[in-house]
Image (cartoon, rainbow, N blue to C red):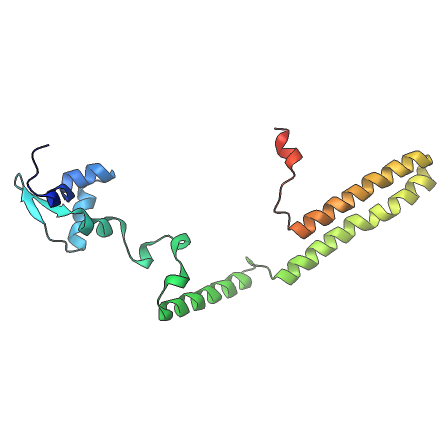
Length: 174
């Protein structure tokens, strides 16, 4: 590189240099600069140069509409925009519920309760079945009861944790 006469020249780049630095095609850079109506900051070696502070938003967007949804923070929006955002979220949730993509919490809880009943009720009668129909000894029945109680306790703990935590024993075996 040559000598810089002005420190601002360090931040004024040609289209080719911008494209190379950001891994974009020159045509893409040119089109975005043209769409944003950015005027050249100067000319170097016969080619226009653009200030990085001007072309950054044109290349990568700086409006809320250009941001990925995960980066939108309603708390930082203007009141009207925040109201519109929350209203659109309510409408999205209603649509997802209509399309059966979103299940109300009470329906989920009922589903889990039905599942637990389907598992726990047979476990309650298993000891009696093993004693009367299989003829297991008292020690064997005690051991089965301990195992059943452990399973029920584990199901209970998973239910109150919401299943969010993984059993560390499973991950250690890999």
